[in-house]
Structures are given as structure tokens and as C-alpha cells.
Image 1 (cartoon, rainbow, N blue to C red):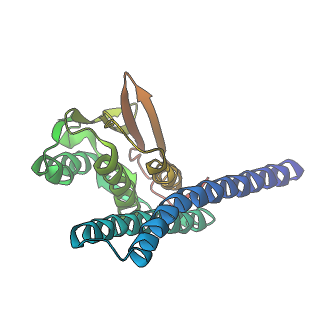
Image 2: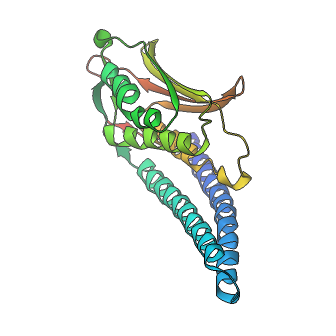
Amino acid sequence: MRLSIMENNRKEQSALQANKNLVTAMSHDLRTPLTILTGYLEILNTSDDLDEEKRKHYLELSVEKTREIRELSDELFEYFLVFEEEQRHIDVEPVSAFELVSDLIENQFLHFEENGYIVSGNNEVNEDDGNCIINPQYMRRVLNNILSNLTKYADKNSTIDVTGKVVENKLVITVSNAVKENMEPHESTKIGLITCDRIMALQGGRFEAYESDGRFVDKLVINMEEDNNIERIKGI
């Protein structure tokens, strides 16, 4: 009992420190576009000699910075929603592993191809491989985060590789891409990756993000269904 209490306290302190670090990092990430936006607005407010073309240019830059700030605040809000869920539990259910990967490759990535990206999909999951155990709503959040990051960071001149396969009773989905050049440092917050990690843990799965051979890789490891073993999974 004493060891269990100590372990719970350790996890709680670790979670609090992780949140503190995240808030500190996000405060820095929000401060950068806010400072730039303030500069643009001050120019518009104090410069009487701006011609219409320059005024329009600064307005467009200002709108772009407000979008960036909104995205950052949305990501932070989503993170804390997930963190609160982690204190409880979520329901999971069986979903066809074949259909999950097929939908990801054939539907979710369709608009990437329409927007000039090169996508290579490889579904090694068979229809008779069975079901994986997920919460569909939370899994959509994970996939949306991955797709959002691809939109921001993926190099259009390099192929986005998507694969799905069953390994040792786990569904493994990997998405890899080359990162576009000339990325601004404040654009990479990593909060989406942290959110993916927490959501996958809530489902009893695992999320990994790493670099390999000059490419960025997102890896999802999802439990496959076992007989009479569908139950609520508590967050870690």
C-alpha cells in the first residue's frame, strides 16, 4: 500500500512538472507571434504614409499571425482536455483493423494528393486479421494531429509514406515524411505530438515520434482484439 501511494505521488509530481514545462514552452511560442503581430499593428496605426499596397500587405501578415496564435491556443486547449480525461478512463471498442488503415490511406490522405503532395500507401492488413481496440473519436484526434503536422511541415517534393501491418497481435501504423526546408524555430511546438502520446496511452496503445534516415516518423501501436478482453482501459 505504501509503495503504491509513493508511486502515485511520483506520477502526479511528474505530470505536474510536465504540465509546467509545457505551459512555459507554449508561453514562449505564443509570445513570438504576438510580438510580431503587435509590431505590424503599430506600423498600421502610426504610419500615415503607407500606400494601399503596403497597408494591405501588413494586414495580410497580421491575419496570418492571428491564425497562428489561434492554432497554438487550440492545441493547448485540446491538450488540457486530454489531460483531464487521463484522470478518468475512456471506452474502447473493436474496429476492423483493415478498414481503419484503408480509410486512412484511401480517404484521409486524398486531399493531400489533391494539394500536390505525393502519397505512397501500403496496407499490409488483411480483412481477416480481425479488430483493433480503440476509441474512434479519440483516434480521429490522433490522426487529425498527424495530418495537421504534415500540412505544416511535410516537404511536397518528397513522398509521404503510410503503412499499416499487424505485428505480434498489434496493429502498427507508420507515417513518414521529409521536413520542408527553412522552417522557422517557433513553428515547431510539439504539443500535437504530446497530445497524441496521451491519447494513445488512454487507449492502451503507444505513440512514437522520431527521425530516421532524414525523415520524420509517426508510429501508432494499437492493441488487437483478444477473446473476451474488450473492456474500459484506464489512462496511464
